[in-house]
Image (cartoon, rainbow over all chains, first blue to last red; front, side):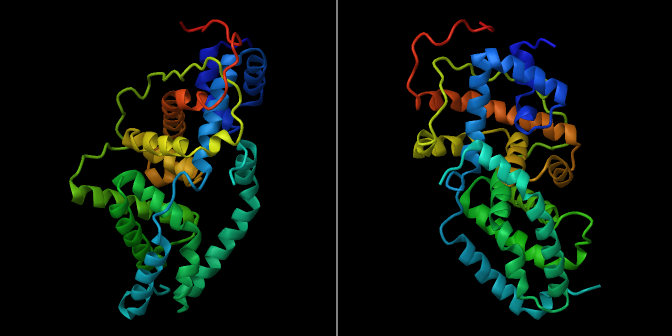
Amino acid sequence: MELNCKHVWAHISEYIDDTVPAELRADIERHLEHCEICSAILDSTRNILVLTADDRTFELPVGFSERLHERLTRELADEANAPTMK
Amino acid sequence: MLGTFASVRQGIVKSGEAKATAERDDASLIARILAGEKELFHELIRPYERMVYMTVFAIVRNETDAEDCAQDAMVNAYRHLSKFRGDSRFKTWLTTIALNEGRQRLRRLKRSKEDSLDEPVQGDEQEIAPAPLTDWREIPSEALERKELREALRTAVAELPGIYRQIFTLRDLDELNVAETAAALGVNENIVKVRLHRARMMLQKRLAPLLKTTAPARKGFWGRMPWS
């Protein structure tokens, strides 16, 4: 099926996640072969997800892990809070 | 080092095997903790520290509250560990605790009223058109290393409407799948897919101009805009 740009945009997210049905995927790919605009939109969306997956983009506060485990150590030391098998 | 998109996503797909191992390890660690080896709780939660922090940060939106809240969520997970039945992944169960903790904290802060995830959101059915990019060319990976791009993305995510921010965080930052995200948020899977798509398009629309300026333009490369 011949897709127009708006059809492709509507499925970009699922296309990236590889959850579009095979036939639709093939139609999208055919469109992308000749549509540089949709290819650019797809590419830029992917770049955003690459940046999101980069640990440096969304960083934990410095010392977060140490403070968390210090608190857990205090919690674990308190027998009253210990979880038990029921 | 920043990986390519393909390697990042492949990593997620490939993690299927690792996931099975992680689940088995989680189950055995939990059994041992409940049997008295409580120090193992440190080990159990170590892979999920970042996920819990990001989940609560998406709700409370400031570092201090997010850190307190993430600690409270982990403490709650420890105290209620015996209630984990293993019918979902430990990661999903922990996400649910983090979400609850975040929402409670937000209510206490009375900073803003959170949108209910179950309510239809105005505009949910409306299409969001992505930003058309003229003079676009594929961005070299070095350009994505730019610090200001990461800063702009953090800001853009923080400013997404709550329902989109939470779904984007669970799916694209915490890497929960659609079913897990739906279960954690108590919404159906279609809502997750629709809102994730909208969140990604909102980010694309906002960040595209900045992404574009990282690449040298190719004059005359683009023709007409079909929607103009």
